[in-house]
Image 1: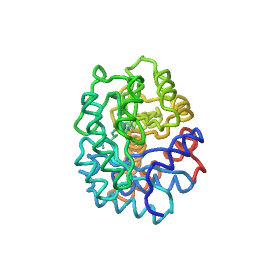
Image 2: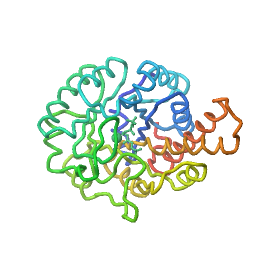
Image 3: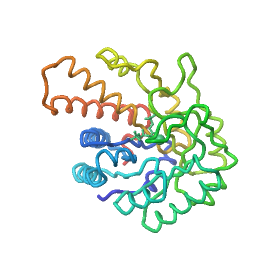
Length: 311
Ligand code: G3H
Ligand code: 13P
Ligand code: ZN
């Protein structure tokens, strides 16, 4: 089974009222933990790679790791570029075997976003890949782009039909109040997502797959473990899982999760060293980190995304 695009996955997810998890990968243990979880639960899967991940691990290494996971598990996996900043990185990923790319033109003007996204769509579709575009801006840090909460802006539903028609994108990321990283709401502020915007987008774009970025839940147990064993993550807070379940039951077909994997992995490594201060074999601490990733992904698939047994 070769890598697949997101096309069929999203069609089934839309009809079945669930979402597919898009998990960020940076090394072998992360790829293994995620794919073992999806295999055990018979779940569709998107693995996504940021520019930072490509810089850290190298395109070819990541490509080969994902190909190894496909060979090992027989899973249907889409390999996706996360937050492509320009045409060149999208082209490079498509040429290098990715089946899907995101072109993130959301910080450009509306017309420039359309022109850039359309150019990527033309190239991607000519080469059998799918494209995710974005309208509206999330707060948080992606590689070198740091969007402050003040500069973040919700998606304007009145733009979505025009954007999708003029660009030809296969899916659309929207901003409804989620944000990247582990500090999503200020201490004391109630977590709130603009479901009214999502509803209006769904009404205007029937049967069109919507994507949610910045969707980690930042479970207190991991933050507590990190803080207990020498870490310092004050006031970390994420998106309540019931809100993500609600979104997955609407037009949202792809939910992006990275920070929750980082937290699970870091908590496991910190705990391991606290309990085994003499250890210096990387396998000793990376094995529990990989198990933590696997458990986190199983939890997401069964309790949040609803994509168990959807292959
Ligand atoms: O949205 C961003 C992802 O969490 C990737 O983060 O750019 O640090 O790899 P990164
Ligand atoms: P989190 O930081 O909430 O995990 O979001 C990840 C993401 O949106 C990747 O594109
Ligand atoms: Zn993102």
